[in-house]
Length: 230
Image (cartoon, rainbow, N blue to C red; front, side, top):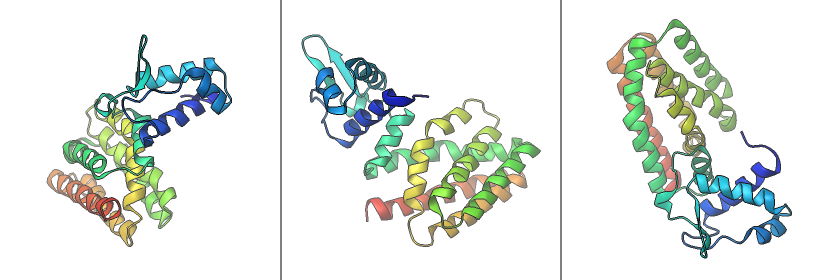
């Protein structure tokens, strides 16, 4: 969506804000200072600042300047903010928020997918699963098909409002999968749980599909806690 130097400045400043380089309430350096530090024009900085303001990360007021917004004002469903959060030592609270969202959405979506999925949905879901199997212990290679697997389920639910949600939280899912799959033996166990979800959907067994998805999410939470909480 964003390319070139403008996108790089958004990434640099956004990452810095989420990482805590500037605390909420702190004043962001002025455009000239940022431009000098990053070797870009004030125009590029100004456009990047506008993007960050749209995401709720910063706010500008006359005679006050541009300051970092309180975290409760951040758009926590913004794909970039989710990506930056999970790339910078996410906390247990961040993990809890994502897991709670998944529990509210995915088990029910999986139940619906078992009832409504098309033959094409089932084929694409199985292919995503097979791609996960092919990736094996290569965690990075397994992330794309894992995300694809979950997005297909949301689409197969038949609810047109659910599929975009999968794209919104894609960055957070990718980061959480990368964390949870670093636990020894996690990949093999995760594949078995994904297969249980897949088979239940293929068989049209809504109860088993919903239960299997709940189990998958529960075990993912346990794995994430082992890494984040210890």
